[in-house]
Length: 312
Image (cartoon, rainbow, N blue to C red; front, side):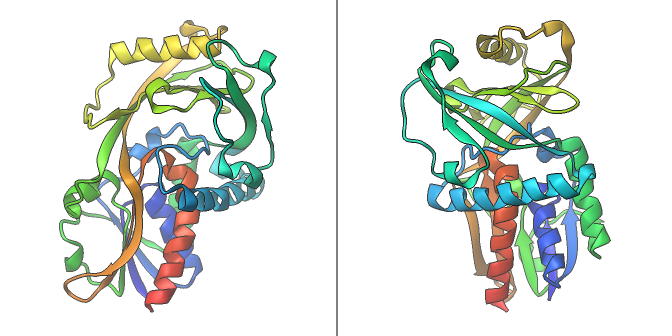
């Protein structure tokens, strides 16, 4: 089957790899490539965030967890490591449904939780270093025979293919006329200091994270809905640092080495479904992953292949 994947972010590249592995002839078309994508700004920690419906995202997340862990063991160039982290919450909540699908999960003791948080858990998950992972994904797609092209796509029905896979991210708002798709602005800071373990408050209103990579620790964050601003905000920088110091008092501001901004493609629900275009070509939409693009990437790619097999 001649398949065209639109978009070269983490979702598009993962789908291209899976389709190639399934025997498809794949052409990947995108206006921009790494390192100029929102995927390159991802922190990136495996953790379901700003993605629904939970009954599907938990499954896609579990499938992705297993694949990222596997890649971390066999593909050192992919830049994936396993690290432990602690999630802090301001009230006691139901434990996440994905807890049984990962290698380590436990509820924190009271003396392990800093004020003003009152509840939390420790978990182990993949940390994905996007400056390594994105080039690795692209190289993998090419290695499997994928054709990569730079180009603008203004109308999916104009693409000559047996199957179109739409992974256009925030661009789907215009490409598909999808007003349910909205940007959620994220700003991060890079610091050359290791916190030992990750510390997180993943509620959108109080979003805080210290994600320890091998090169730097990523500090965040913001979750500003409908904010298209890609400039660094000094106010956000100070807010991020203050929040991170509350969970990591040893944070040394003199070790800051960089900052970045990206726009998460958020939607009330991830759009992963098929339809037939006006010209009769089937299309599979795969976008709207919010802050969980990496977390859901392989699970969603496997779902795309399943849908493709059903289509023909």
